[in-house]
Image (tube, rainbow, N blue to C red; front, side, top):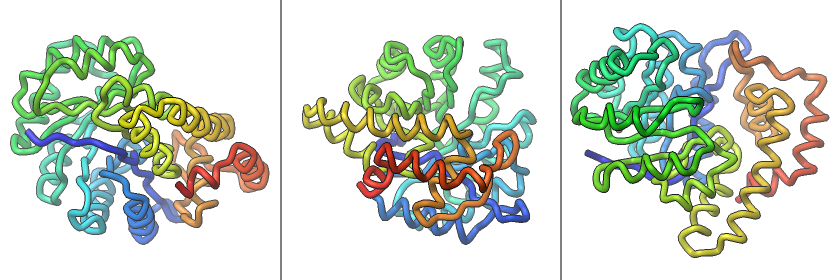
Length: 295
């Protein structure tokens, strides 16, 4: 089964002022990030607000991304949905559209190990030729037990682990030695995920500063951990500013600073107040955002 690695933005979905998918803005964002040498795209996940979009919109977004990428980097489509039929339909569409893999978050409705396995088995069985990455979003869940329960499904190829527990992340990495992808997904811990041996990193602020995260991974490989730690602390200052300002809206406002107007988020994300834009820009300037974005 194909494996993946490197620095992947959890791609933002741009919306117009009329709250429609903004395809031209999406193409510009993809092209900008390819110019920054990202290694792939994770589409319609939490950052991309896939669960806040209709099935038709999610299909549209994936088609635009795959078309714009033109095979230069791999694309993984997040296809998770409460309605299993919708998840299956999205997975089959991803295969037809040319995605390189699919992924699904573990939805809160699935609290039983047997129903969880049935969900992922159904999804994997719909696209047996595509690798499926389980998306574990931290919390009290035993991620290692979950993946042990799922890893015998033939095309379950790994996990996107968004959590701070590096001990648990390492155990996920050690579950299999071949054909196994484990992406770290917590931006604030990217360096430490790389030190544990993660395949790569998928994250929200990689829409803004992918070069800084790429440099962190290079520092781990070269043994320059002091430089890597310095970069991690610097990007964490930016992340803290965004969180304090209302993350989803502030993330899109930060993209606007870079000349990439991606509109406003959808609920449950809140629009960024226009009268606070100058204040956010000043705070981002104080923590060196522009220099990090330019790496």
